[in-house]
Image (cartoon, rainbow, N blue to C red):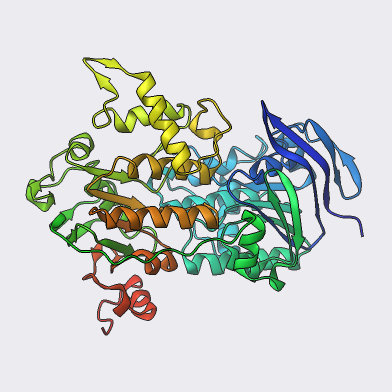
Length: 501
């Protein structure tokens, strides 16, 4: 049987950087095939070539045994190739159905599209309201739109780039059920993920890239997560260094914070209270859409609250904006790195200026010190191994994992006394995730208070001294992580607040 798609000798260069160096990849019919590699290994470049977004400098592509040239995504979709990108490509002012309509022939009527979205949502367990505006949706719900938008075109090959980064464990299970159903129908899936246990559970074969080259092909079910990580990185991934550290004064205190939802689809915060001390990491778990975004906005100063509801180092800060809070020693890393943490069409230096103009000495007497910003960015790039391809690239040109390393590194290297970070290792490889987590631990050891908002329970148990759970806009009492079982966390995530201690 001919391969569904076969890439032979693919070469792609961006200036002096060779992103793909004579890459071969074969995906068979009715196969779920993993494409693995650390951040910057060339995975996203390769799949963009397979989807017609980029053109290779060398090499060829065969579809069902016939050589093809994919000049653009429309030609790829016409063949039967669908793709779900790591970074969402949605218009926030449009509805779910209107965003889906943008990828369909103009002759398709909106009522038919709404009906098709509703039907696919029901069939594949991806709940969506076709007429709801995208701006009002959680990150997990936006991911569902991307998946439904690809499935509505009835693809024979579905390319998924980090599809589970923003999904809850229950949503991951449902996605895997969907993908297994697609495989049973004879379709194929090319699956990019840094979550190696998921790859071992789901995928039939794996191709591994390192430095733009294919370094291995294997059956992931016959490997361990550690051996897959070793193939990706080229060395063993060091475990986190657990360091005993003293806990000092309260750096962040939230007192009975109640905040009305910003719109009819938002979540109202109800009497949130917490305290985080110097040298401590507080983990906040919860299913997406239960008020985590609203809490982050309140802590960062994006949404004001009564002054005494939020205290930073003892100072009433509820009315302070984000710049004032940064001047008081706080730092913030939002969940959405492209668009919220970084402006996509701005360079790395301009993004560094946006977040550091008030605290990093980049501006003096109304003049911008470009040399100082350049030195700062170079320091972040070196310290956090950000692979940006040289020069001063736009934020959107970095892979998701490298942009995440830049955004996290930009804040940690400021040496804040308080850091609030949401989804710190979303979409980064095993080595980079370990480096970011170690940097958070080291920051706490140096006396900072750290708040980690994450849907990844493994991450929270690895990092947090104490855990609390958000559900329907409320926050449970924080408990020592070692005394907090996964069953208890799961019950609280489900809104059952009488979980036994």
